[in-house]
Amino acid sequence: MSHRNPDARQRLLAAARAEFARHARAGARTERIAQAAAVNKQLIHYYFRTKQGLHDAVLEEAGQEVASALANLPLAGLTAVERLRRLVKAQFDYLAQHPELTRLLVQAEGGAWFDQAVGPLAALLTEGQATGFFRDDIDPLQHARQALLLHLGYFVLDPLTQTWGDRAVWRDRTADLIVRGSSW
Image (cartoon, rainbow, N blue to C red; front, side):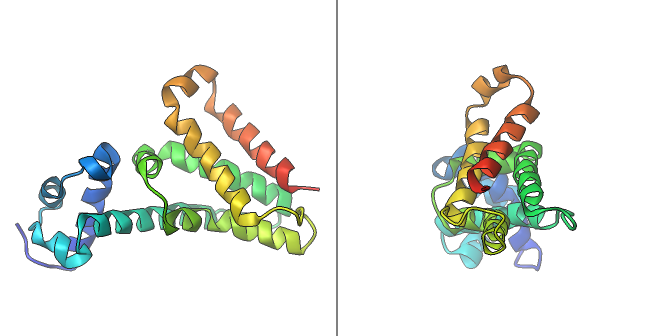
């Protein structure tokens, strides 16, 4: 096992993400995390204090990952309504393309990670309200949260939703629901 080094923390986060996605927080074992990261188990306590601290750090990183994926979309030149539609679709597609991340988020308890993950959607809704594109009687953060919950719900019910046909249909209908619920 290696001693502290610059990439040990990142290896721990990567190993913990896989472990928490597979076994949830309660079933995850710090021994397996340390072994997968090829570090001494004590480094978990050095960097994160507790298993809960490690779990919180993994979720924070996951929230940042989702937010970054949305923030990096090329949306210049589009109307606020079309940007919202594309963000909601992209959020679904990102979760579909990253099943380990989706399993992790589905099993997660509340926390700041959730609002971080929906930040780009909430910011767009707030901006759209200020410019008159979106209704001013909705709470942008709550509306953005609902979009993510609809997506996560689809993946939670995967054995059932697999029988519903093409995922893109659900994604598009969810985007329409969010857009119609926020537009005049």
